[in-house]
Length: 165
Image 1 (tube, rainbow, N blue to C red):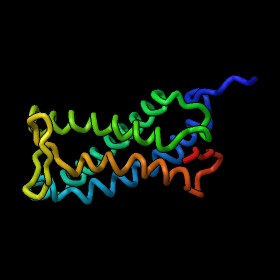
Image 2: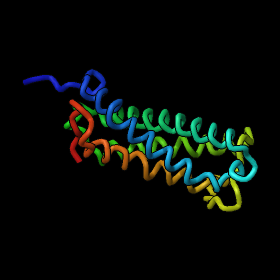
Image 3: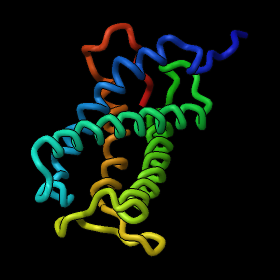
Image 4: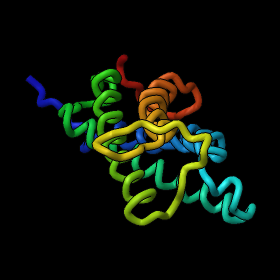
């Protein structure tokens, strides 16, 4: 009986993450960041260079969060080779990890550090006495599973196997 190969020892898994998941994640998060700009006061008060910097900075942070959430999900599911990944399980755990981090990050940046503010257009959710923007929470409910699915069906990535649904 052959030993099961763990994902982190697989070149195919790293190729899937780097060549399929991360690029899709970056594109989706860039679009989301641009679309949600009016939900922050930066949209009204910021200069064009500061807005462009914020989009770039936030997108890079989103890629880091999304990639780390995927890695956490792969560890939590004890994933094997790429074709054996359960996208539903991996996606759900990645969402939970990313949403958990986002609750902390939104509190840190809107309350503790006051680094950014929501505009009157941002719908908020009350959570443990805090007001958390709904858009950043939805970002992490929508994008990780969508990025996984799109990475799976992407015809353009070379030599990177797809996980199962």
